[in-house]
Length: 84
Image (cartoon, rainbow, N blue to C red):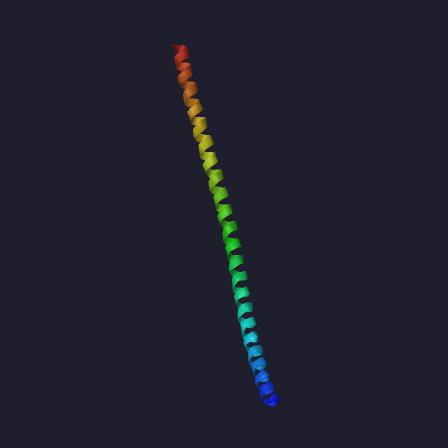
């Protein structure tokens, strides 16, 4: 009985060991996949940040130009009132 138990135990150990190795390989492949996805996401985030900053600078430039033009118009209107 002990020999049969030992044989069954050894067979189970071998099978569990093989399953554990396959599981580890799958886990490592998933880790590599997720690491690559993280790198792509970080690159996309940096690109989006760069684009957003560029748009924000352009909008600020346009706003300041509009503000300057509006100030010039008000100055011209003030001069007309003063002339009257």
